[in-house]
Length: 356
Image (tube, rainbow, N blue to C red):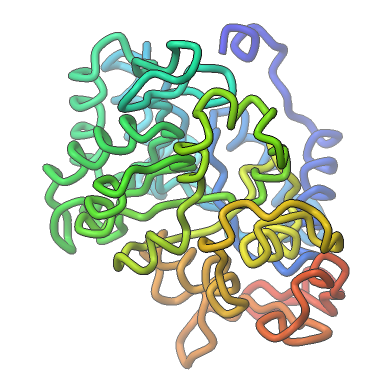
């Protein structure tokens, strides 16, 4: 974060053109909406610039402002002014709006900076990023009371358990663990979960936002840093998408770009195969967690929209927003090995063609 804070501010038409081009690549894979999980003032300024370009934003964006563990109450108060469009300095545009807060409760398993119930093989991943989890609790409540939907990064199971505990104390429009506007609070990544964590997640109504395509960096012999840190047993509890659904939990799928590729077709293939698409000889990781073609599509459409509290997105129905993608073949029945190359003929936002 110190490097990011010291970096020269971005912006200008050159950056806006580059952002538009990258988002057009996402739209070409069938994406109509995405969540930006690292929103800053410079992000909002750039998106305003993109909206002035011919064609504007090719993807509808839901912005999560980034809260760092060391941010003080003044920073919290400042961000509350940017929620939605009520008097905000950067109120959003036709195709983007601030609606979430993103917080990092821990780091990553591979580097030994996650927060696990039990230490990893090197004795690491034993604490959260926050010097005081009580401060995390306070910040969650402050943003919740301001009307934000909460999104907490937690790769480790102890981090997930703590976020769930805090969320369940927050009463929203649709009950505990929901924002005041009805959107369910969410946790990002959830790379390893115990059985108790899965049950608690399902009971809470909190959304598990997961990225199965992150498994592309694992090795069959468990020599990768993720498996080496966790050991074979806990590595076998990775990305428990099937278990979350079977327990009655809520699931949304994504890429976490630029950590992984932004092509939704690749992500849908990984959710179904749990191995490298196009290579039947590739190792399959936790095959019992594989999703069906229909579930993978829901994870990128209807379930992802519900994770934002939006009933008018991710569905074809009277009164819904006409954000649509036309595929060459039905992605539900298509061979998942062929999905990454399956053409998307056109993508529309609000009934207007953005790609195709």
